[in-house]
Length: 277
Image (cartoon, rainbow, N blue to C red):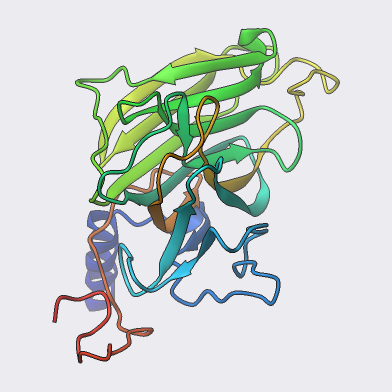
């Protein structure tokens, strides 16, 4: 009886912490044990191709002592990208934490954050800061309902949230690919646990294997994206950070900030890195 009670308490604690149910987890990466290969790739990720502008950092993290830093150089089109591949899924939830440096200037058309896509081809889904006002949208590229063109999906639940630089946000995106030949696909997004975007009855992939977004397509990769672009180059040196990525076939949710001190270091001033003191 006692073991059953303990198991129930642990299950409740995990649910309250917003952690993925074990059966649904595709992968989790908090970057605490990540290393960089000789060619600049972050362990377990395919990339980045330009490690000068996307790399591991111990200077800013949502939890623990390490995250990924994206460096936006003036005059450039952004801060590279990297992919994490996994077994194909028809529906996925992707949760991560995102922060932008104080005074961050959004690109007038879009500032990308992540990508959900097949290993190759389409459809592709881009959670991004659309336009220059800091609002989340999801751009779906090469989808059946748009005649194999792109379509933007905006916040349509409650009052739209505009991101503010200088703080961490918990962002979770849900993509359900439609049954080939049926319009039963879905898109959803939560910001800090609050539903802000929800669309049902969508047709993303086509009826046939030969369609531009084929009936056989699945979500097989997630990307960290630093693409800044469309209209203008990066105007000034600025940064963003990503941490605590998770992909699951079940809702993930946010979790409290934690630090197991496994990778903690003491600075030259005697403070513990990531802590004020």
